[in-house]
Length: 129
Image 1 (cartoon, rainbow, N blue to C red):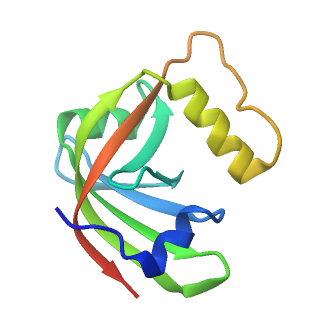
Image 2 (cartoon, rainbow, N blue to C red):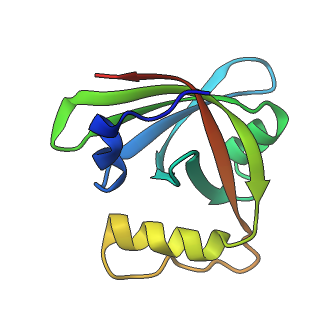
């Protein structure tokens, strides 16, 4: 396991978008911009159950993320990791907290039947530039 260096922890306080790469069933890469969070040990990605990234990460937990500083796009994190936990517990509260961070003071919209999930990703290799 690797860790996020203190010099780049501020990226998780800013409205920094991550580009999440997952592996499709045929082995090809799939990349999606996502809101990102960090709990001090794991990267947290919140998504709706059934989306492509959800299906990919459940099948193959290997992922890569690139996070750019919105104030300086030459300052970034590159992370390779693996999904170590998938949970629905607290997922709606978590997406609401992310919505406040990225959108301001508003909750995330509820869609009938949508189930939110949190993927906890353990960083395996981290490059901070």
